[in-house]
Image (cartoon, rainbow, N blue to C red; front, side, top):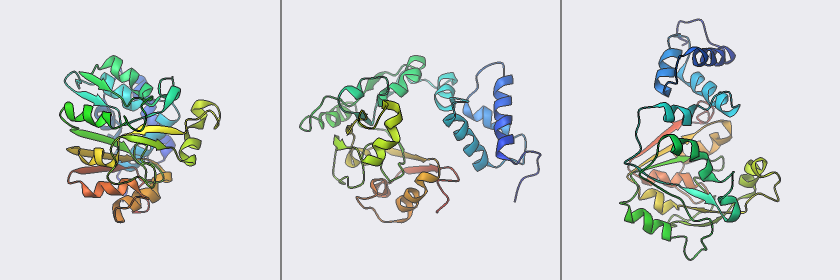
Length: 253
């Protein structure tokens, strides 16, 4: 049942979000924005979440990093361990996975920042796990759910017992990121990633999924049994996992 309010259509919700952001005197965090939007009781949470994600995708707003940068949250006592990176030169360039964190790290410096070595070979990839353990282990791992059930660069077929390793990127993964590198031929074929075992050793895991493309994977992850062809399904073996899906990603549950 819809709430009593004037705004129900997604286009109107997007216009309201942009109107509020345009008329605020200063940046606000995500919670404040949602409180302002929900003043109209006709707006549902999932519709709001979808609209916000779509505005981020279309670059109308850069909600996540901007909200963190504008917040009172301090990261100066936190150590960041990046989950994965492209191998070779791609792991050091403008489209490297780690480059996405640069604006946040500039605004909110961490106590330390670690990333997998894009030049590491298979023999030395697991050195990253040693660095994690030396820092006291992982308190929190935040993962995005891929459309084929992959997490970080753990593609379908990834072994349960794997730690940080060199992974061959599936063609569908390469196709999804090809626009960043110009052509499919220029797109990296390998990445270095923390493994399923590394992830399961964390104290807490957050799994986030957006869009219809990962709906099938979300269903298999949450309702099927753990199996190598759906790497995210191994998260069922952890005792403290939270999953956040938008309405499209949750459509098959």
